[in-house]
Length: 225
Image (tube, rainbow, N blue to C red; front, side, top):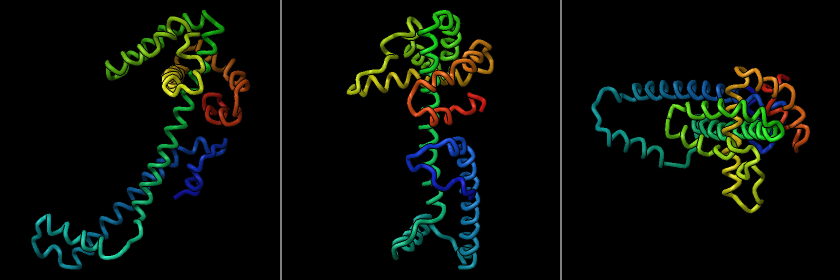
């Protein structure tokens, strides 16, 4: 297992480890498969050595043998179980970072559209079309509906910072920003205007916010640095 997998998911995020996510997940998948295959072969080898294949056993008898062994004394967690737990935890962290990336880009797009009505008018049709193209028509329709306020007015209150005590409003705003950010990631290489907008304005937008270094690290691939 590569050493880069160590020290992850401890609540911190720095420029040096943001983009190791997918690599670490791939490494964990490979290691899990290797250990699982090794343990399956070991189990079959020992079962053959014990004479298991010389007799017929009902499923409940086989399960009873294993349960008796499992309960006979306290046992340490297996390597496979620990690896799978690590992968689950790391995947949760990866999803959180992916959502943060999209929310940042969504906030960037909203800010640009508020200050540049022409950009809003030109990009909105493509955003609507992209959202509606979801493989599930129902999901696509719900996503378009969630952004109707944005399509009508990028200054819509549903995209403004909600009151600190409004959890529902915060979740809904974040969902809208993530949808817009997902569109930016999907279309930035295909739409020249969007590509130019990102190149010209994204760094300035990030510099005006909080946690500047962290957010730039999250969007390193988009910034091209």
